[in-house]
Image (cartoon, rainbow, N blue to C red):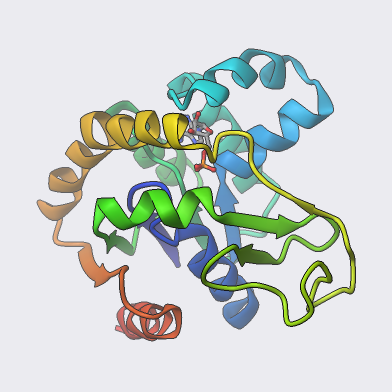
Length: 215
Ligand code: AMP
């Protein structure tokens, strides 16, 4: 199964992708995570991407499509793929068609997480993760049971994404509206888009996604 999770920053794509990974052993292919790893490692791609990401703009189509191809090649042919944060432009959507076809895969579902943009800024600027295990938290909506200690692994180190500040979030949303939202009609024409209310409680969103996947 090959699924795209589509929605603006903060819609919950990453959270829902992680849940599908845990439940179904699928692989999450997040170009944002791949780029952050490249920045951290100081690779040529990372060096190129760092400033662009800090501004909230989009990294070049060629870079992200190459990352996706490499990641798919590292997976078994039968492993399911959840695309999270990719494709983000019409050119990337066209590349993904080729990338999948070359590997004998096809897109099963594009799941749109529909959200109220005003709520997103609060969602994003309050979020942080455990530096050790990556579990996600939020200043307002989900603090650890014991403040400052990760529920999952006990670590006391946490981190925030440098691009999760209000100014950058606004740019990221504008990029979404201008460049990513236009790819929805392309998939709608193929009859593979399902819409989920991303403002619902996380478990309800997961249940709705499960239902779509179950067919
Ligand atoms: P994300 O973690 O998906 O919010 O991505 C964080 C940042 O990485 C974005 O604001 C972009 O600068 C960059 N990025 C991630 N995925 C893509 C993509 N598919 N195309 C272009 N830039 C991307």
